[in-house]
Structure formats: C-alpha cells, structure tokens
Image 1 (cartoon, helix red, strand yellow):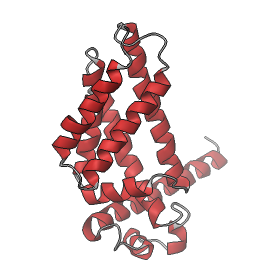
Image 2 (tube, rainbow, N blue to C red):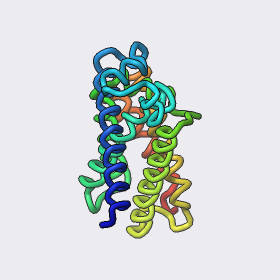
Image 3 (cartoon, helix red, strand yellow):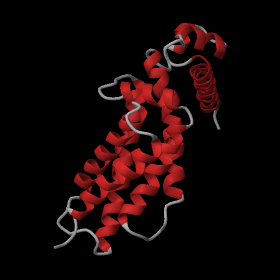
Length: 207
C-alpha cells in the first residue's frame, strides 16, 4: 500500500473510532440521564472530544439519537432475518421479524418512544442513514411477499413493495400504540398487530 493509501486508511480508522466513541457516549448518557436531560456538551465531554468535533458526526442531539438507534435497529433487523424460518405462513414470518424489533425497543422503551416520536420528517446525516435502513427493510419485507407469491399464498398481481409499505404502516401503528402507553407490549403485538396483518393477508389471497 502506498504512503497516501496508508494515510487515508489511518484517517478512515480514526474517524470510525471517534464515531464509535461518540455513539457509545451518547448511548450511555441517554440511558443514564434520559434523552431530554442529555446535552450535546455532555456527550462530547464523555467521548473526550470538543463539541465542535461532535457536530461533524451528528447535527444536533436529535441526530445523535439517530446515530445510536441506527446501529441498534440494524443489529435487530439482521438478527430477525438471520433467524427467520425458511418456510411457513407469511403471517408468522412477518410476526417473527416484528417481535424481534419490539424486543429491541423493549430494552429501553423511553428512548424508543423518543426515537419513534422524532423520526417522521427528521433530517440530518444520521436520520438519513436511518431512512436508508428503513427503505432497505421495506425491500426485505417485500421479498417475503414475493416468496409467499411463489408458494401460492399471495396473488401474483400483488405489488410486493406496496404490500410491504402497508405492512410497515401497520407495524409502526402498533409500535406507537405500545410506546405511547395505549397498550402493553403483548397486546400491541398479539391483539393489535397480528389481527391487522391477518386482515391484510386476507386481502392478498387468491380468490
């Protein structure tokens, strides 16, 4: 590797290390103090950097929350799909994925509630990364619809991405109902989300 290449690699590693320090500092403070009480200055101090440096990685406190939650969401999504049954009814495969995401949010519900409340219309570099992750998640839900089409469970004329968008809306509504305190977790999953998905699937079946 050339000297220029080595220097570029070192800079990239240094940037990644600093991002991880910021992410970990923000995660610890959000858990200890709560989202509302945490300040960007406190996060910078915990990470051992200047506040101005922090703003190179997150535009504001809201974007710091998206920095933290992006990695947690990504890990939960990967875990959900890694453990997904290769076969089975579409309903149960969807529920498998959504249970894993609910479980991730259940670890720190107050933080999850802040994230879900701030997500619609959010902007900033880390919000954009979360939006990209959400779009990729929609494609993976759509892939489950296509697999169900191949098994004859879903009508061939159904547009998988449209179905995935509908299902994501149902999931997000159930998530909001739980995180806002309207329903306990299990009721949100089994008596709110599951029946909504059943109704959705009935509308997709042939005949």
